[in-house]
Length: 400
Ligand code: PLP
Image (cartoon, rainbow, N blue to C red):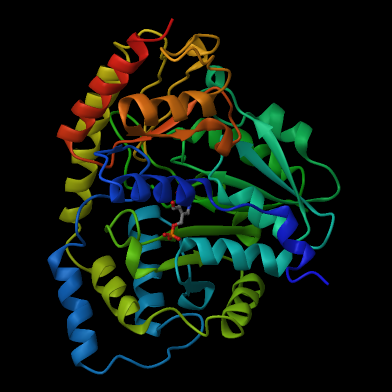
């Protein structure tokens, strides 16, 4: 008999988690790797938020909370939606989980039956297709190429919808491409969804505060409020407040869906950490300067990384409008040979070559559903960005 359930056959470990392990083991072996795989801010959680966590501990907020989250945090999240997104949610329409990842997971668990389809525009965050597959449903991956700014068009959406479509998963600002949908682009997508009332919308807005230059984050519900009764907005504390390890994310949506997610939480983790929920309430209600500063720092680093990578022959890169990743094409390097005589046939080969020759860790675009590209995070210091890009340029210069 087999130990593991058939369900696991459909999924693989998260590529970003695997990349992190590669970096950790090389470093443990004493190799000075520059890490461009990082999916989290390199800053510490701001002190006033840490202080709120300490006070919660000392004040005895150390017990189980309601499965959907504490009243204080749900209230703070409702206020955030009103203040930052112009969206009206009652606290009952909000559910708190151990990260946005858990909210997405439970939302899919709560709604998918075998054979259902979920539209996932590529490039995508690595976890969406695997989570869909784990629940017996089919990820319908729609390629959104560089020529369309890595964004889903209304025509492509229309074509992908079938009677079995349950969800469209949108992610703006996007991981890995940094693409940010404009108001007009969202209106066009919403117009298609309006014609297909059986399709629900999961909009992952976890990078909303990191948008650069002229780009603005707009929630699709702000342009199409009529979709609110079949939309789940997912967001969380990890990126904006440098709180990845605290594990607090949340969803806002129609009551039956939110209640179903809370039911699953009650039978799995019971609730998110009480201490982290207290700190998250303070983060959302307190001074937002820390978020603005982080965004400015990321914008400077983006400019630095894009500037350096654009000088490297064989790489081609758009300047991302948001998040903290650059997504250069490495197609210009395919077919070249390394000094050891190995031909680089794929983005995976390029990734491994850069790791060996330049000691710079990146993640292959294939893992994000977009072969021919690499994801490079600029959530690291300017010095590391400078050193890593110089090492990449040198290694690429050795290719023949
Ligand atoms: N959504 C996107 C697009 C992400 O990039 C991430 C983290 O990498 C998450 C969701 C999950 O965030 P968390 O579970 O830390 O809230």
